[in-house]
Amino acid sequence: MSNFSKALDMSSQNLNKYLNGKQRPGALLQSKLRGLGCDIEWLMTGKTSGENEVSQSIPLMNIPVYAHVNAGEKKWVVSEEIVDYIAVPKSSDSTLFGVIVKGNSMYPEISDGDTVVLSAKAEIKNGDLCVVEWEDGDKHLRRVMFDKNNIVLTSKNEHQYPPIITNKNKIRKFYRVMKHIRNY
Image 1 (tube, rainbow, N blue to C red):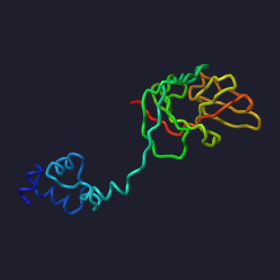
Image 2 (image 1 turned 60 degrees about the horizontal axis):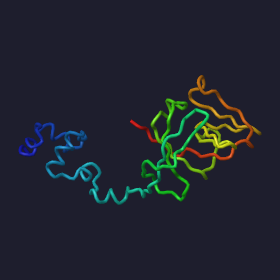
Image 3 (image 1 turned 180 degrees about the vertical axis):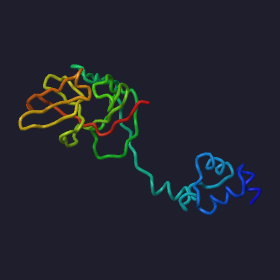
Image 4 (image 1 turned 90 degrees about the vertical axis):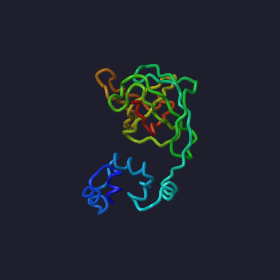
């Protein structure tokens, strides 16, 4: 035991706390244990790495990401050029695509440079964040609230981008935001 504690650069008393389950190893100790060939997954969960990988794997699919949109401005433009692909959990929704947001109308919820994953066929409910396409092709990234015959489109920055109230008939298409990926 003294050789093991020396290899980990700790006292035998501290090592006993881990061996008796009184303390869990932190990131630094886990790194040292990996360096000695220990299976951290087995140590922490009782399962081997292979067992956890199989049971926790999530099937993914790649979707295209298009160049920016102008968030909050009247003209919202999606480039036809694919600038990247991102992996998202596999879905039967073949309409999924990503768009890089330009502008801060939804800040701090969504910031300039963030990516939103949109669906053209997902159900839209009150309070959903959507890209709303008008009859004339203009688009806005806004939160959607439905009233009897009207739709209220709100932003996070209502001083600069006031709410828009419009008739449902003036909207051509909704693209629901399914996922938001921060650009750190």
